[in-house]
Length: 104
Image (cartoon, rainbow, N blue to C red; front, side, top):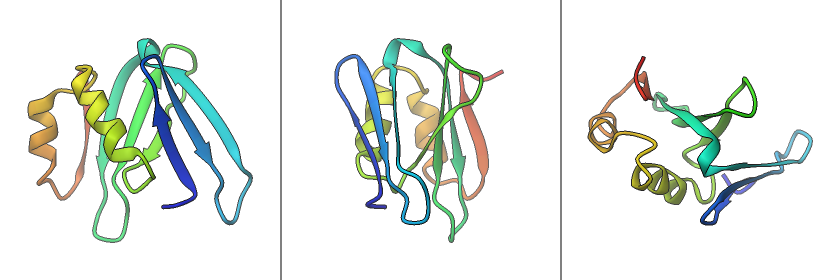
């Protein structure tokens, strides 16, 4: 997905999105502001999605796993203990479902 780019540094995650059929937008949030992460497993025709909730707004940021930089961002989420590593291993073979950390 060349039109959706995710990058990050020690403090901040950057989203740079320029969809072919829509408006370009950019967003950023701090790692320290993340309060919950959910992983939606897509089917064969849909991307898996990462939903990141922060304490700065009620809606989440959605990052498709096919986005440029998404695998690195997912690894960093797990490295920072923002999503349970054992649960991430479990969902790697899942075919459906929404998995969130922390769990409610």
